Image (cartoon, rainbow over all chains, first blue to last red; front, side):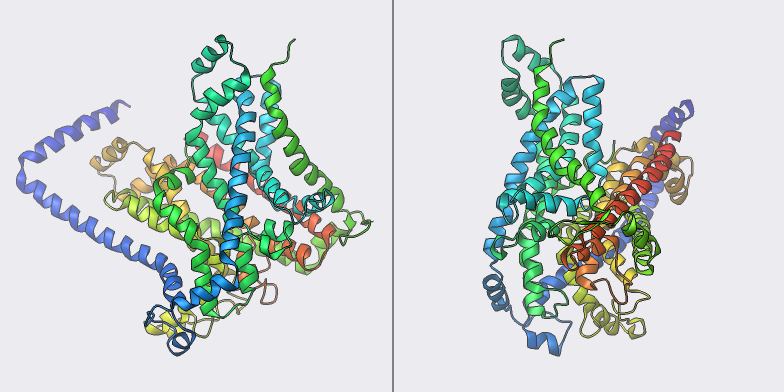
Length: 302
Length: 288
């Protein structure tokens, strides 16, 4: 520790002396900037290569079948929006998007309410029972969602909830409960109790305290949770395929899967469908990229 | 003793969790001891399903494929992600822009990425072989998904491509927690950047490494979308993974008992790997 402080003092001394000797600093500056410049160039090239398949997807989506056959690797000669028009009509794109948004929003609301409600006692009452229940929920975070799929399917079937939005929303809600409980409990532990204690002294019931004092303070973590739930619902295929049978009820990704099938080779269908299916989420990502990035890495590093 | 009324708030969560997570998990174990096609009563077969999993060559190959796939993805996704993060951390001018750009593939869904790459990999007119031809590397052209020697690696490469930005973002979050003073001090003491990376960055990034490895392991073990869309598990079972096998048992073969047994194996595998990883990685973290 002492030696580190010493080096720090030296750091300051060095930078000061550097400022006096102009030749030294300009030499260092150019050497550094060349290195930085070349590093940026290398990284830019890598980023472009990684993004190339995404550009490829967009580019291909505007090309006609004939163009692609004659010259597989080129820019579109003109923008063939007809590809898009056909896909939108053939796979009931808007219907699938509406289904996805409805199911996602319902799941977010339910997960947020149920898990924040549960987190309130878990964060505020400290005894071995609440601790045990917390661990019990955390188990759900490591169990792969695949694990209980077959029995869950049979259970939902026996409840008569197959092919209903309610069944799928329930599955998503419960699937995300452990994450919600984890997020809210750790977040709530970090906010001071004074406000809720004051509310209780004023005679507010617990439920009122929760709704008017606690829940509003959980906004930032609710946003993060919403990002996670949105990603998991939007990109999921297996649950809708399993729990919904009517084609028109499907969410976007299974709808794309049904539309294209496997071994699909028709690029004039494949690429417009791919662009259309990823566009809404990509737009959200670009607009809210800061929040999404901090949300995705939240809790990852402490 | 009076019960704290706030405990009632636990009821909805606990009930739902018991009914839709714990109950299916437990009934999955009994289901795995049966032969059940979805109608009528299941036939009790004891441990037969498990015996089949651990003796049938096909199932053994599925387990091998899954573990190999997971190792490939975990090593490359995090190795490359770590290097990217180290480079970007030293380039504050472009750090946020490039981090966002690298995350774009992970915003596509597995299904969409699977479709794009299925086409990119296709032997005739596929983007990858065309690019190789265009830059004069025709000798490197492959039947990427049709050759059983490389198909699983091709599929794993797509996984790495898609999520390397996610690993990078988590490592960058880890870097943000390392004080710049330590690095400056090392720099002034004449420690080379490479040495600093191994002796300062990596130890201090231990929590981020733990998170990244755990996320990548769970992510690969449960994914089935890529082999499903790109290869359907072929050629000759080369890309059949645990997730895809369970998927086909449910959707095509209607062998619910077998699917449940394989799910139990998957839980055990995930549990085993996470416990080993965490005890090792956390122990490393504590040492630091």
